[in-house]
Image 1 (cartoon, chains in turn yellow, orange, green, blue):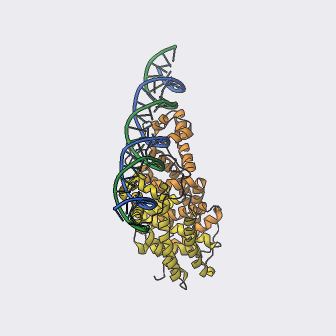
Image 2: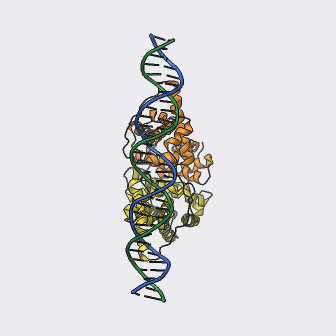
Image 3: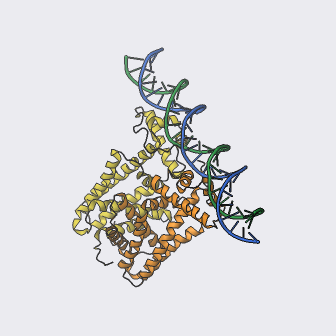
Length: 212
Length: 212
DNA sequence: AGGCAATGTGAGCAGTTATTCGCATCATGA
DNA sequence: TCATGATGCGAATAACTGCTCACATTGCCT
């Protein structure tokens, strides 16, 4: 396993144009997700992914410049899904009370992450290591923006200075609570939703009026 | 890299008895920590650890049955440190208001995790994969127990049914908020302490009195 | 001193893995 | 139909890595 810090190539060699190759790419990406879920990071290698996808390694490298690109693609895919759902939830949350709005956002995040919790966990860990390209960073910023916008609507109730920082903190907290629940096998979405919402509400509206 | 699911050997071959070998073991453990911090999981290999420790691979394998044992040792080491500090903080928190008690606990957790944030992050991720032995599980349970004990003192104020589950959730939340802060370079411990305490308080005392 | 157990060494084995490349097959437009 | 580019293949290569083992060195004890 040659340690690669810098990726030799950044762009895929080819972009699929025929339906045939689009199916191939999709199979590879999905296989990558499954390998990460079942074998974890240690068992994640390009030969295994190609095998599970039912294609040859050569085909894999036709569309992905290197192993990390697979993870980056998965990351972007999951992020896009979450982003779309968060955007919709943020739109619906217009005019609702803060607690209710937070609950909507929590519901979406929980729904997304419980869909593939193991994958979410690995990607969350790896995202920090990868040099995300512009697209990925935009996706992340978009999610935070939608949350920040919701928070801004309730500015008066919120006793935290930096709303964007608060959005990132909320995302991290929510992820952690879901992970914690999954790790202990307590995955009742409704109960989880209540806990997450409550923690978020506490974080945002607390007055921190207590001494050391 | 032979993929090992089950560890071939569970016990180290030797337990150090002379001061010389104790120094060797310590050097190996510390080198392992540094490699994880600087090169991450991908760059973590036994040859690199032995190199950085200034010993030969053979010596490493004299005291650690396999690579995972290094991570398990690190995990136990960090957990012990946290456990000791949390125990002390829990003792001091006797009789204090819930908010103040939480703040004490938050301070300890933050102090610990900010000492070596990158290491903490990797260990947190890997702990889930490792089959922890009895010692490790006891350490984890101890930390949760101390927190649960503190929470029990304030039972009336807390609107969460399972206090032990709450303790695990608080630990996860705290870790996540610290990670989030580190990732964005915002590591003012005092501000962090306020945010963590507030989120914890919200999680514990919230009445969840809002509809869907 | 000298013997024995503890400790330390590092080349090398056996295996794994990322990536390439020369070639085969397929699909489409002329 | 057939030429041509797109797509697919997988053996082979060049590394890298977990771990062992036969041997050397050290230090304690009598």
